[in-house]
Length: 349
Image (cartoon, rainbow, N blue to C red; front, top):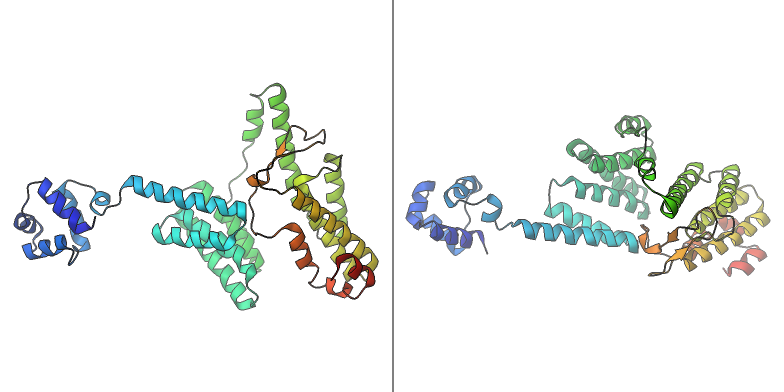
């Protein structure tokens, strides 16, 4: 129903003629007639008086029913959530643009858009486009931080702006935003909840906390040098004692790829090829444990109450780990290995 049709319906419901409505609004009855025929629309300044005269809200007058709005939000949010399972960043960006356009001023959706811009910046080969896309993301993160009252949304944008300001080398600005990040509570929600649990349920929750801490420790250590790579692997093997890594094959793939790159830079080419072989093994294992609608279970004593469901993990790309591996070995500095017989034999490139 157009706004003119709505005005006509509500005018009759309130026993008003076109002339009477026109008199109340200080416009001509011809203007009212044009609204109702769809030839023109009332001026924005008349929306308030119309709502009072017709005893409705502005949303109802404009045809913005709450149930339809909620339904549309749910549709967009479900679609956005699905892209984290599929890894379809292009689709996620499209959804974010649509959400921002349909709900201007909604900071949650602007935060979506900022993260999409930040992540898709790495797809640009041209440096000027790469930088411009990150600057757009930084601008949108800043707008969210300035305008939202929702701490969760604000925290998300603080994380984003700190990360991408650092990418741009603007560390002093990043520090100012980092100060806005909420302080940790003295006792975590997990620790409080743990006190309420008993028996197997408590053991499972302990293991969940351990798995979260393990991922956090591995991320903090990183694999920027050989010492970090070795430490990361030792810690992982101290918890995953039986080699059934499941999700953690992802870490080992990147770990051995990084070691191979370091060895190549050092001129230790034979070691580099051996580490790439291991990286490919872990990438293959990661793909094998990444099937849709399949639930796996850890078997190490430290995590044996936990299941791993690949569908629960967010993805930022659609390629498989092995596909990603083969793209990686084409790049610098690994191109120095391409003419070696052992490299060509094993990787068939």
